[in-house]
Image (tube, rainbow, N blue to C red; front, side, top):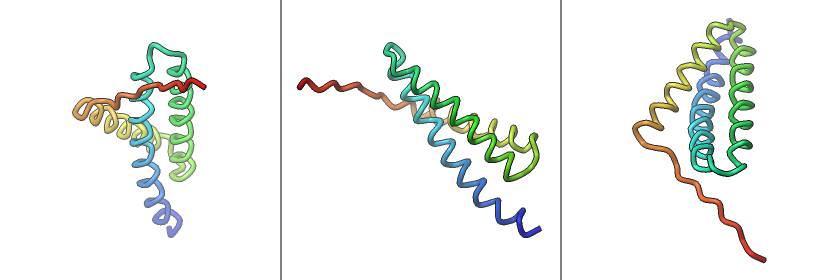
Length: 96
C-alpha cells in the first residue's frame, strides 16, 4: 500500500514534464518542418512518447491507466498549443 502512494508524486511530476516536453518538441517540429531538423524532433517525440508510457505503466502496473494518462497529457499539450500557439524556432548558422 505504501508503494502505491509513493508513486503518485512521481507520476504527477513525469506527467507535467512530459506535457511540457511534448509541447516544445511539437513546436520545434512545426518550426523546422521545411528543414531536415524536423526529422530529429519527430524521432525525439516518438522516443519521448514511448518513454513516458513505459514509465507510467511501470509505476502503475496497469495499461489502461498508462493510456489514459498519456491521452490526458497529449490533450493538455495540444490545448496549450491551440490557445497559446507554438514557439517559433529559428535556425542560425554561424559563418566561420
